[in-house]
Length: 207
Ligand SMILES: C[S@@+](CC[C@H](N)C(=O)[O-])C[C@H]1O[C@@H](n2cnc3c(N)ncnc32)[C@H](O)[C@@H]1O
Image (cartoon, rainbow, N blue to C red; front, side, top):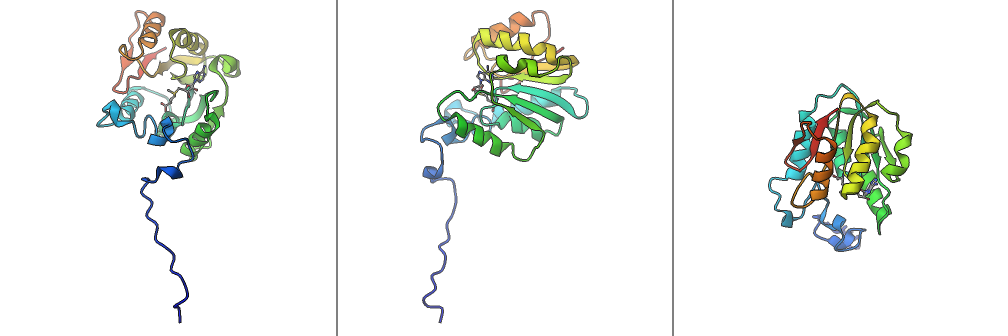
């Protein structure tokens, strides 16, 4: 009786079919991301990009329901990690997405951060929207935008005033081999202060 009814085919989704990915093959997003699935060439096992950021968050004494700003959202991986820590009630994340496929990466960020309605995405350059944030009210600023020395210094200059006394400012890629300009900029701006670093090359200092 049911002879003519075609049974639906069982499809096994195992992520091996990369052609389903809506981003261009070979693009950074295709292999899954920076924090969540770093490329094997980085030799990240266990995933220090993930653990390191966790270490940094655990090291900070933040008040309940803290507020933070992140410079450099990209796919929203660090943003979602900040959010799922449960330590923040307000997260502002800034990125101009001024590269090819920027809007797709922004979409990816929105998907990765879909559980948290208190994340504000600012599609802008840090130096063009710094005035939108009040001074002295944020518990934490994380700088992971443009990695030239000049930009890191500018981000520190513009966003350090946003941090309240006893809060923290930090960032990513404090790595003398890969990002010497980041290291020099941070050392220059916080000479004589204790700078803590973590396995993902995040850095942080107390204000
Ligand atoms: C390394 S990615 C950020 C990665 C992300 N924080 C994470 O760990 O998952 C750097 C991002 O900074 C953005 N960017 C570059 N200059 C910027 C600026 N002046 N203000 C804000 N974002 C900037 C780039 O568009 C890029 O998406």
